[in-house]
Amino acid sequence: MQDSLTDGAAVRCGICGRETTILFIVDRIGGKSFDLACRHRNALCPNCGDLVRDDSDRLESVMPLCRRCNPEAFAEEDDI
Image (cartoon, rainbow, N blue to C red):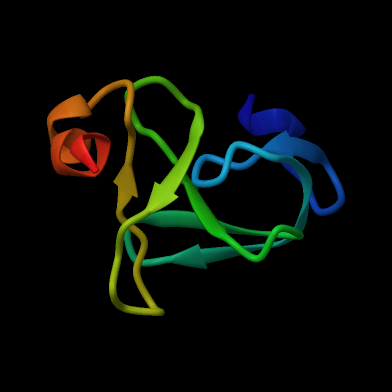
């Protein structure tokens, strides 16, 4: 999947699940961040390679958070 991730590529957002496009890609501390047309910032999961939520609270870093690989991190969110 990584090879096809370029500016303008069609992707599914790891946060909202919408089909969207990549506006731009930035190298950050911890990996690349993908700013999408749906206005979400995604990252690549190091385990499965999917686009997922960037859970970093700092602009200069990226911290992938994958629902598939780390379902326990979403337990509270699913209870709502």
